[in-house]
Length: 161
Image (cartoon, rainbow, N blue to C red; front, side, top):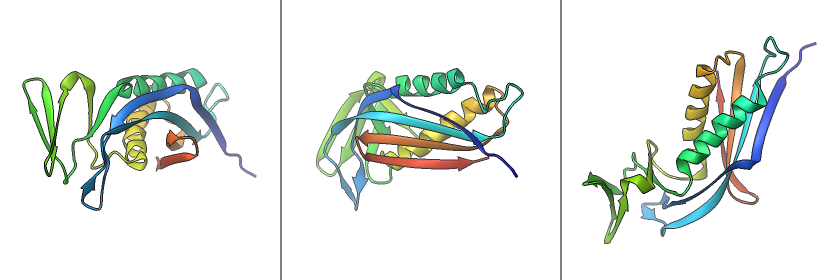
C-alpha cells in the first residue's frame, strides 16, 4: 500500500486583475481584462514535518506571483503574431492597423507566445516551481496551476519533477 499527499491553496487572496489581448487564428482579440483567480496544488511525499509543504509557503509564492501581475497589461513577448518595441519607457504593440502604447511600469512582459489561460498557467508553473525549489521543497513530485479567467472558465498546466 502506498499513499499520495497533496496541498491546495486557492482563491481568497490568490487573485489578480489584468488586461490582455490573446491571439487566435492569426487574429488579435480586442483589449480587455479579467479578474483572475489562481489555484495551486502540489503533490509529493511527506517531509520531516509530516506535510508536503507549509501552506504559508505556498500561499506566499502564489500571492507574490499575483502581485506581480495585478493591474498590469499581460504582454506575450514571444508572440509571432504581434509586433513589440520597447522605447523610452514604453511598449509599443502593433497588429495590422492597430497600435497600442503602454508605459513599461504597467506591463508584465511574459516570455510566452500567447496570453491564453493555459499559457499563463504554464508561465506561472515555471515561476512557482522555481520558488518551491528555492524554498528547499525537494519532495514535490507534481505541481498543478489553474488560472481562472471567469467563474467556470479556466486553463491549467500540470508539471512533473
